[in-house]
Length: 258
Image (cartoon, rainbow, N blue to C red):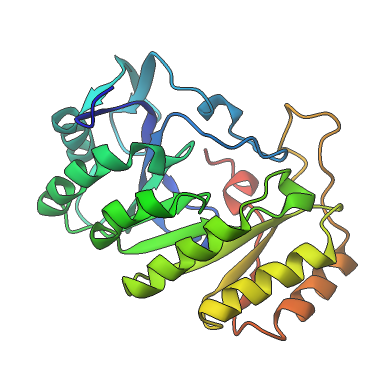
């Protein structure tokens, strides 16, 4: 696959259910392929690149057409334009999978997208590919970076996370962090995450996202949501070193959104 094409899962319009943009309307561009295998992942269908992708025709109506992969920049621009109704959307979300696996494509595509729309560009990422972030940072308006706690995710990327946040700071790129927690989450992991973020900038917001019963249906046993007392204790601990620590579950699931 060349840099001029990418593998998609879907494009659709929906309400963002996580992080700093929670409650806002976005055009979601979901890329295929992920190099992580988080135990709580609720999007395992995005792990592998697919032969086809689903393109919503009318924002919010779920009237999908199936198109072959890979897709070109021109195709993707046309599909975004179809979604981009005046005053409807607040931003465009690059999500996955792991969108930074398509960094070379994005480096070509995002300047064209910026020229076509005034919508801010938001990157949702596992935060473990700093070199790829550096390729496209100048084209982004906001980054939501997951911190993969080993005790909750089964993944460990501390050095990459730290380098990733440092690049965001160097590029003066707005960023927030998100930590998915379950009943097994360790205090040591949370302390390490808080110290890492605070070392870059204690004003970087951190979102604690309790895992839901719907997450990780592929794993056995499925992760359990944390107890309310755990979440209260964790938030208090993190606020000792960080200015903004919010607890927000996946709100889009509560209202039946994708």
